[in-house]
Length: 228
Image (tube, rainbow, N blue to C red; front, side, top):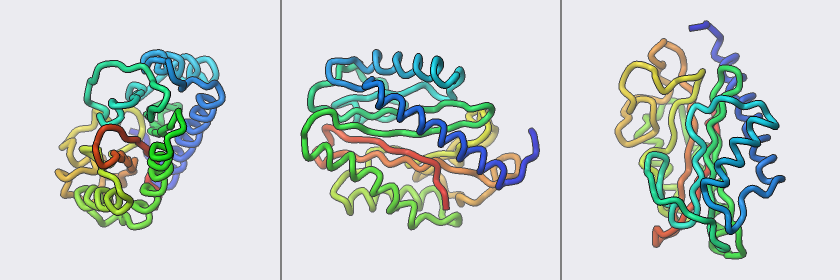
């Protein structure tokens, strides 16, 4: 594996994230997410846009589009496909690869006029920033997960994720050796975020915020690179 300084690796990950956010801007400009469209249609249009406009051929994980009741589910769930309803929330989770660097970004949209749904969408970034502000490299993955749950509750929501993030790196980090729990921000990770990866290098993290309304019938998702 090529030896780069930690600063160089972080800079490459930031650049990959910036490019992925530009893809989100293009998705919004193209009005791809709209009532009456199925999750599969949105997914297909995003993949085509990513390839045709940005030349993105590889994704370290599949694009994940969830609408309405499916927004309470997580990445590894397989709920029935839905068509976006006029008052749904819709979240999109992108995992494009730029050169050898993985990006992982997620956003949520409220497609109607529901004040409650627009409020949750706005709260996602607020909770993300509140968690980020208190996160420390010497925290364990379990401690950071607990912090995310507390922040969600403090803002009037339920934390919906089984994890609150994971490692991100050169593609493909998913095949790294070792305990997979140590690569996730979850109750099962008792290692510190600053502990080295299997190759002795500092780990870099994605922070995920998955909020559900108190009745747990719909929610939203937001994720970005965790920068100290």
